[in-house]
Image 1 (cartoon, helix red, strand yellow):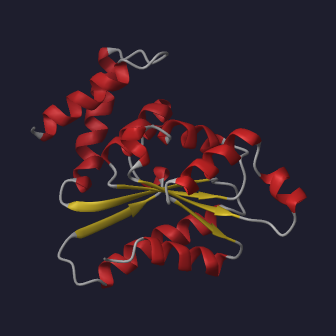
Image 2 (cartoon, helix red, strand yellow; image 1 turned 90 degrees about the vertical axis):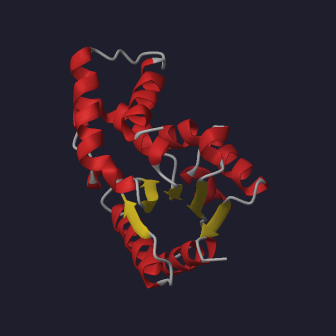
Amino acid sequence: MTNDDATRAVIDKLGDQPGETLTPERIEAIQTAMHEGLGRFINNTSYFVLGSYGEEERPRLEAVRDQLASDAAASDSDDGVDAFLMDDLLDVSEFFTSKFKLLVSYADHIVGVYEHSQGGHAREAGYIDQPTYRKRTRAFYRIYETEEEQYAAYDGMFAHYLLSMERVDRAYTWTTPEELRDCVADAYAPD
């Protein structure tokens, strides 16, 4: 399958989603963005880091992104590595959900860094909880000191998602930024 064929397949898949209307103009904008920004996926191992972009949480997402890129660069592999947050590439903000769906379709690894279930990242987690994406996803979620804090941080649906990821050995817990970095390093250490 050529890059153009792969692009067309993803666009066709998006057009089949309920609520997604792909006009010729929207298809052209998506294709242009993909050709300009997604070429980086072709010869690289990619890590798409998800989570809350809140002022307190974003630095931890950036730290995970940077750690994945530097750990991979320090390995003996000849493969290129690209670790990114959604707003690091593809400026198609008017097609936000389409952009997200394209990136998870192309990313080799989907890395969820969760501290709570308030915000758009909860919807993203629901989307990637499909067999196609689940096998490429790992969830790193923060645990709190008390049961009350834990309950307040994660609503029932999100807590169940995290539990289901634990059941398939795709979830890791952390309490401090240092523990988060250690969990990520251990989870993505070369075999």
